[in-house]
Length: 109
Length: 415
Image 1: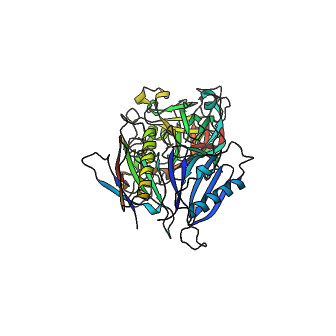
Image 2: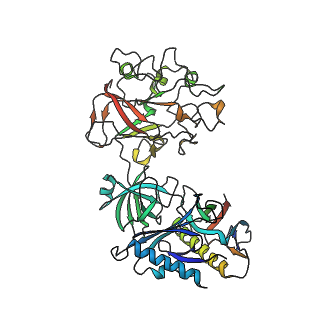
Image 3: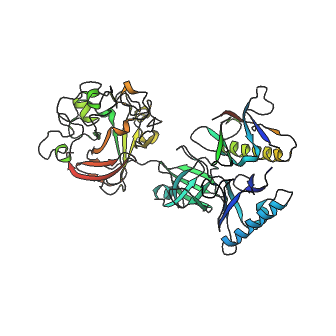
């Protein structure tokens, strides 16, 4: 059975959440917040048969009243790691991912 | 589902999944594990994916590359046979995983050990490193840093904990690296410029000597797109005025004709301010200054000096320490040429955008980078930092791709 992680733009309690992307769990080989000039980006790398490494890149907005960029990177990576391993063990085919408090995903780019 | 294992990334305390299937090569050293995947592709087609695991190794004589290879193969073998997800860190003994994953966006640079900020800012780093970071701004605290095999940025191991000077090619920093190869402190070194050429001080007539009279040679016939306005057409200097002059004419060895201050010179900006008849730049409005950092502030030699440009010196009341100077490098095809410039190009050069000719503003492939030739005049003066003194101006040649001066054919050029 194929499994997917839905990437939501805001924290779970947000009334205006939207799905920004769909991540195939079985194809993930790495994920990490990467520091670029601006903004911070969360990148998921895939290894797909008959292709070179592909990726999804999400722009991230950090509320620096709550988290520094450095704290946001760590919090985001830990949150996604938890969701990934939950998706592996869940019977459900879709697992929802919500960014940590203080972080918003603005776009899949 | 495919079989996976876990590697705990010590730098960020995150469990990372690592696929245990489709690995077709395992490379190890005392500080590195590299897993190469070739997912269902014939081996003759090289489209591999790599996972790199960097290790802090307190006992390299015990934990050799060969022993680490055996450990990794055991973890892979047991992980494939187990119904549980096994963690590599549990197999590694005293080894500490400091980074794990695909080598993504990164910046290359050099480091060297430095006792403190003062030593770091005066140092010349020469040990190649890469940082998990891109974009040219200052790296964040928390950015991973690792040793590499050179400019290609292929990681070879973690950086040992300690204090270092870091040079990224744009700026120099004093950094502290913690025991998981992550920057835990960073301080930017002040840029010490030996010379500052503030174009605001250049108004017609510019006469010799003038300490701000830096001037560049330009191709008078570019851009050459059909219908485009060329450099000469835009500024319309008198017939015979030349934008690119050999040193024997520029430096006035045979009289003043075509010298940088002369009546038939079309170097930018001095020749244009003195002799242009249309679109002459007004640097009382356009905030442009150049800077120069000598290779050694105590040696009067322009060779290997680095050119800089600023777009906010006068907005900061002429205080160099408060202004932003970036290397004056003009990579071909980069648009905007300068992200800090109000128009993306150089204010007062064409319309100040990355494309010289306004009629061709939509053409991204042709930027002002092609118009600059490699000749440059630097006026006389004394270093603001060290003891270097230049009683005469110089006719130089610079690398437009890096902003460094490569050759100084004439060191007795006007003043």
